[in-house]
Figure (tube, rainbow, N blue to C red):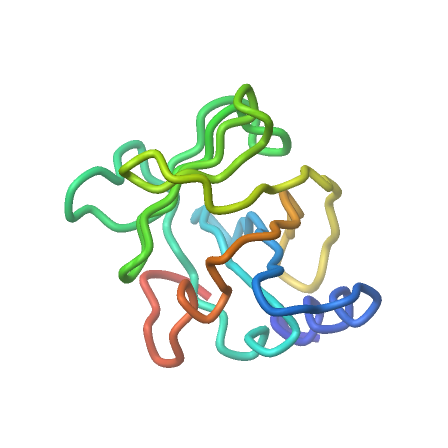
Length: 142
């Protein structure tokens, strides 16, 4: 079973709505990255590399704190740049400080074939998984 089909199976047990998405941390061989899903985008999910700096034009995801319960989770992908802050009510803010929703940690590790999947968040936001996952756009594995 490949990664996307496995995640689709996991997501089939959870309700889906516009603006709701899941964030998964994926370890594949020696690469670490993140994927954003909802029920409509699981087959088009984009791998985003883990990075120490996603400011300016640098794309990827930056995590501060433990990967399974981060203090800060900054996302700069495609045209979307937001940051989750645990200490600020688990909310998502854009670069201007506007509140765009919240994420709740869900944690949990699953293994599928060569993949180790770490669920991090379920988010309710006016951002969508479609904005962070574009078919044909891939920054790294799988």
